[in-house]
Length: 432
Ligand code: GUN
Ligand code: ZN
Image 1 (cartoon, rainbow, N blue to C red):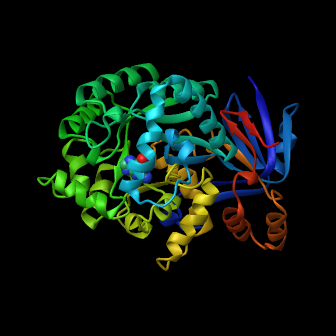
Image 2: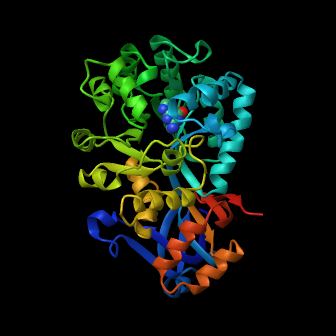
Image 3: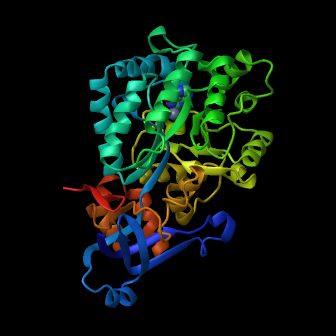
């Protein structure tokens, strides 16, 4: 058995502030110990209490640092890594101008392997240890990503895009081939190590009803796999869905009709949902990924977190790279704060922490594995550096409370604030 103790300030969420109030939502140890045994959380407590009990266990000390659970990104596209920060378009033109030509390149397994390596490195540099990831339409893109993630022993969920219409010929599959290819990927990867599969129709406009049926069939035939798609992101997109599916009562109903809602279903964006749709998401246990940097960058709109919370819809945080502008969940939370300010709502820093960790884990039904330091959880964690930049250091020295520190860390922090990232108890990134 390998046992290591990590000593630093330690903070994790234990509940949603919306349910229990901010004070009851977290645990904090100013001088704490996180004890990791064989990649799992064995104990968490105050150093004064635990140190005398550790015997000969190695203690790794991080000074001026805060350990939190690894960040969870509930929506991201790995093939779009190379087109992040592409100028000028809103969703539908952005897809045609930048996205589809970029994704075409993933027919080549060597290219896919290169980008998968860059992508995973970037996630870990930013303290993200779990992500729900879109591949491209090519099954080999998912083989490349899972192959690289397996070597790092990451808890990662991904899937091949299903898309059989309204996209260039070079990027479409068919209902039948998407079923067959997805099934083979599920058999190859789902449950291998910490990897999990997500059935991934791109969004309603690029799938025929036959393909959405195939997606529903895959879910029914493989309990435990996820459904990952986009929903109600952009006004023109929503109008288009109405034209394509006139017999359905709304965007969510398209997915509902094909049996795609459930506890492991994650819908990116949901910027323009009505109350009825929120209610249906909640009663099916479906989750929504809030992607603030993307929603601002593509001009999609302001995410109504209060409405989703009122209906008790599970919400995680997503970067949505490449429409999103940063791999950093700290930067996503910085932008989330501004999205909420524009709606006259204060996003509490402990709620922010929750969204990026335990809230994301709950959105992915992984709360008994990651997202907090509950005993027995997989030891995925990040070491945040209070002295990462001169400004952060100076600002944090003015801070009088944990809340103030955490907020400034969120607003000013990015990849520079990540000193180290651990996955399953192993260091997978150490800042140079
Ligand atoms: N809707 C359909 N495809 C995409 C995509 O690649 N990114 C975003 N943000 N929305 C989409
Ligand atoms: Zn997306």
